[in-house]
View 1 (tube, rainbow, N blue to C red):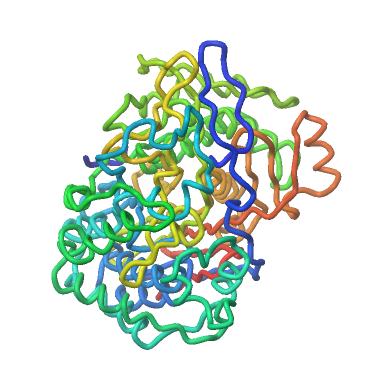
View 2: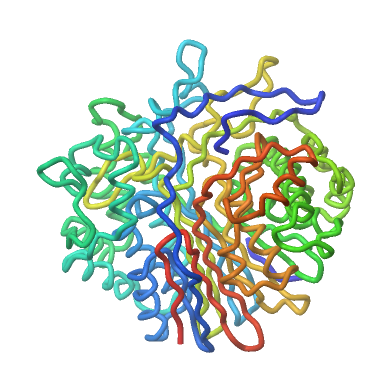
Length: 583
């Protein structure tokens, strides 16, 4: 065993008789997920020394630069994230949160870093309730009301102190240079600024991304961000203290509290009290492999592990990719895993989370027996032996505007990191060159069900909202690293990641092809498949098994590195503008 150290849904799942459900607000049309912006050809790379796969070529190039200087995977991840916050501000940045897995080759240990945002101390469990009803999602999501204390900077500083090598200040230079000199607005950034609703909801972001005519700046426009460069220079020189206690913290608090339309309650004390955490990763058996992911408050590790752990007890090896049979098995495992996720996953510092029990081999073997090879079955939460509390299922409107990177350095270290600011362009509040998150909407809007049983993922002072971010690493039986992978995509992150692992490790697809293959979304209320996932004939077979299927684009951003026969095989998602580079 590897050594370790310390949904968005419009309908709700059916519940077992022993559980009660808390009703959530429906997501309004104007708050729908980040749109798809097209597909490219397969994007892959092969290297023997080091590799970086990120969501933007500028970030990949910056990470490669750090790796070539002898930096570690953590060093390169920090540099890449700082660049990503500049070139794809709609997805992530230092105003948001993240989860990171960091594998250290020297001692064969996997560290989990938690940089999830925290709720201000002034909130209570009724924060999203107005006159006895949950407030509308769109009312909550724009402005200061849903901004959590950002965790990315604290997490990166903690990881650098433990797993970094190059000087902290050196990691900032590529992003500073790019912010000062400018970068060409990409087609994706333009399309999202143009098509997502309410991007220009506040003056600062409007002045940055829109012209005098009120339209988004065009593709190819050289966009400079001197405010972001100045922010990074301060952080490079003084560490994260200005961010959590100094002038940057004050600017964040002022923006949140003084938002004219939807102010929040964050204070300087909230900022100063933030602490990134080291968490033990959660690992699950999958055939001859061990799949490890982030633990609570991320639901990614337990749910990806549960999907794959159940599938190993089904005949997945008998069926081909693109078949109704394999797709059906994946759907059934996913819906069972999500029933557990929606019931048990939350911040384990505040509520009981039966993490180990949810991925225990005997538990997943029993859950797999509920899968009928021929017919869709209703998914109900299970009964992990270790859990002693009330079971209350509730969802939260989790959005897919996130970013993932995978990196391996020349020393054999690796990083899988997923970061987010929640909805596209976050809260729309721009402070000192970066956007603030609206991650508090990842909490359940209602705190309890009709019987007053408390929802695990209810909002509480200082609590971290449940996340589906699923940075994942897979290990061979000899504990050697086999795969680094993850994706953006809201609650669908879990399916994107698990499906890619299934296709690569069990069906033998090269990692880039596995990433590019048609996505499947089965998170509880309907089945979604991309248009190229199933032929018309296979789709009819799947529907005959009892599934309600919708064909639509599923906007993942899966980035992975497979290690095989001494080589690094990288794949970047064809649905986004990322790249895989290495030497």
